[in-house]
Each structure stands twice: as structure tokens, then as C-alpha cells.
Image (cartoon, rainbow, N blue to C red; front, side, top):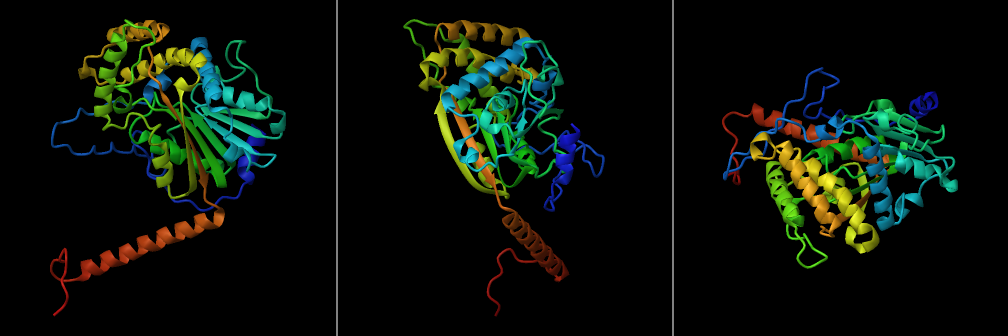
Length: 381
């Protein structure tokens, strides 16, 4: 741990602008809880208020060997589909002593596999998660143990990192946040990841698309006469949830747009895979995906008619149907984003500052005028 602190402390960082605290977080400057954002207006209906944060469910679940096994299994199956640990566009540019961070690291399975690669023996690896109980070495003996050069730190992925961690890592990785994020959570996590990336460094985010709109007509059977009633019922719950979060329940499909909108991003690359492309692992992925759909159903508002008993019944039915080879071919999105170089970051922030100053001067000039300012002033006579 001391070596990691030394690594953080020795890095030179560019000046950064303070970002407002997110809803539910404590602002480090004012000590006040950030206000709830105002939802978009709708003329068609009054949307139910969001009284609980969708990401809470991930961290209320008690750590277990079953959870650890499921996370590790999901990672290995998706790797079979993508064919890489670190995207080739990132790997080719990493230095021999690269510093890699892993958000939502869980059991550290991604970092553990990097440890086993002889070409990466000089890498410094850091994993972040909120459940130290399943970090390697802390849980049951079946958890793999990483070498001493790997560090695990307790940190919530929606919380900004302290300045000493900013611009330290050559690459920051995360995956499979689809069941625990919604709405602006996706952008907020991307911001937090970008804070940690060095100028010229990279983000790699792998995720699935769990939205109602993109999956409602993609429930398939492999055998004639197979029931898909539980899958259909689950999709009705996802429809309600999608509507509750303004059709932003799954950011997998939106990751590229989120990355391109970030002011510090220079280049973005997207690869889209599908779980149906490898039939020998598809059934295993379908069974694991039932837990993802189940978590999303657990975030439905209380007035939606989905109590815990109904969710359990539907999930059990989906498991039986998945074992009967009923499936949804999920899209797996891989988004790779490179941070701007140091001089481009400084140039961009100076431009942003100049624009803000110009707007402030314009506003001051308008306030100094007498009478109302016309919306569309015509030519002077």
C-alpha cells in the first residue's frame, strides 16, 4: 500500500476544474449533500419519483462465494467472445511498466489474469470495489491470490477519487455495470474513470445492453413448444423500469456517445459483439444473465406491483426456460476511449475558460443596458 501511495504522490497532474457533487454524494467543499436532479418534463404523464438510487442494490447484496463464482464465470465467458483482456488498441500503446486500474473489480479476476501474463510482470495493478470481503485473500480459499504488486482499495464507483489518484493510470478498465447503473450514473462513472487516466491514457469499458426497447422482440426458443412466459413477464417489468428512468436503463449502447461527449476524450473506438456468436457458451451466459435481469427488477418502484416474491418466481421461471434454451442474444459493447495529450488538455481548458469569461462579460454588458434586451434585435436604423 505504501508503494501505491508513493506512486500517487510522485505523479505531476494538470490543473483540474471542480466538478459538482452527484446526487446523494457529499460535496467535499461545502459539506452539503448534492440536491436531487430535476427530471425532464413530460406532458403525457407524471413520472414516479426515484426515492432510491439504482446502484444501491449492488452494494446491499451480502458478499458470497456464489456471487464471487458468478462474477468470475461471467468474465471468463465474455473473454471467450471478445478474445482479449486488454483491447489491442490499448495494449499496443502501453509502456512496459504500465499502471492499470480496474473499477468494480469484485474478486479481482481481471487483474488476476493480467498477473498470469508473463509479458505484464512489471505492471502495477489496482482494483477498486466496495466489497473487500470478496477481494483475493479475504474470502474463501477458492479465491485466487494475486502477487504483492496488486493492490485492492475500497471505493464506490460513483464517488469521485481523491486528487492524489488523478492522472496516475495508463489504462482504467471496467465491465458489466448494466445491472446496477441507470440514467446519468453511466456518465458519472465515466467521469470518475477519466479522472484517473493519464494524459494520452485509455479507458476500456465492456458492457451489455439490457434495455426494453432493444430486447423486447428478441426472446427466442431453440426447441418447438418451449415456454417463454417468464421471460415475457420479466420484459414487462423492464419496460416499466425503462420508462421510470427515461429510457436510459442500460448504457451499454450509449457508451460511445457518452465517451465522445467528454471534453477530455481525444479518440473513441467501439466494437459490438453478440452472446449468440459462440453457441457453446451462450446457454451459460443466458443462465448468468438471469441474475442481471433479476437485479434490475429489484429496482422497480414500490407501486409497480413487483414485490420480492414475484421477482423470485419470475427469476426461477427464467432459469428453467434458459436451461430449456430460451434466450435473448445480448449485445456486448466494448468502448475504448483515449484521453487527450497534456498540451491538448491545457489548450482545451484554456479555451473553455475563455468562453466562460466572454459569456460573463457579455452578461455584465447586457445587465448594464437600460430596458429589456430584445430576443432578436433587428438592424439599427
